[in-house]
Length: 349
Image (cartoon, rainbow, N blue to C red):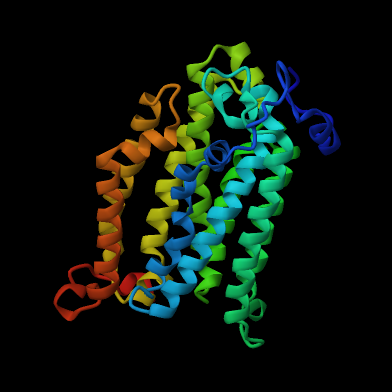
C-alpha cells in the first residue's frame, strides 16, 4: 500500500457503487431510522464539548444570552458532525468491511444505503448551517470582528475541511491527524464566535495540541490492535505508520499539550485578564487527565475509544473537577484573600 494516494476519492464512483452491498443489492430496509441514527454516532456528540468550552474561559457562565448562543452552536455542530460521519462512512465503507468492528457499521454492512446516507448528510448539513446562520444573524454587528458572522464562517470551514478529509486528505500520512486536530480547533473557534468572545491564540494552540494527541491515540489503537495487513485495509494511511514511530509521536503530542496549556496558564495576558496566577493549580489535573486518557484508550482494545471514555467514571470526575476548578478560579482567584498567595508581579510586567 503506498504511503500517499495519488488521487482523491471520486464522488461519482461513490454514488455509482455505493448502493451495492458486498453481497449484491442493499437490503430494502437499508434506510431504516434505526440504521440512520446509529450512523449518526450520537455518542460522539460528546466531542462538541469543545464548542461549549469558550463560555467557561470567557467568564460568561452567568449570562443567559451567552448560554442560548452556546447551546445553539453545540446543537448545530452535533448535526454537522453527524453529517461528516455519514459522508466518511460512505467513503470508508470498503475499508470498514475489512475491520472486525467497523464492518458492522450501517453503511459498511449494507443496512443503510449510500444514497440514504448522503441524502441524510445533506439534510443534517443544511440544518446545522441554518442554525449557525441564525446565531450569526442574532449576533450580527458591523462593528464586530467578521461582523459577528464568525460562527457561520468557522462552521462552514469545519464542514468543508471534513469533506476534504473524507474524500482526500485522510490518505496522507501525518496530514490526516493534523486535519482531525484542526477540525476541533474550528469547533472551538465557532463556539467563541457564537458567544461573541475574542478568539485567543491560546485557544487555537491548546486545542490543536490536545486534539493532535487525541487523534494519535486513535491511530495507535487501530494499528496496535489489528494485524498490519488488516489495519492497512481498514485505513490506507495506517500502512505508513510504524508502531514505534506513532508511540514517539504520541509521547511528543502529549508533552506538547501539557506544555502549551502550562504556558497558557502562566501567560502574562492570562494572569492579567483574571488578575491572578491561580490557573496553575489546574495543571496537575490536566496531566492526570491526559495520562488517564492514554490508559483508558489503550485498554479499550477493539472497542470504540470514545465509548470507553464515556463509560469511565474517573474521566467524568476529572472533567467535572476541571470545569468546577476553572469556574472557581475565574470567580474567586482575584479575591484579595487568595490573590497574593502566588506572586504575579514578574508575570504581568
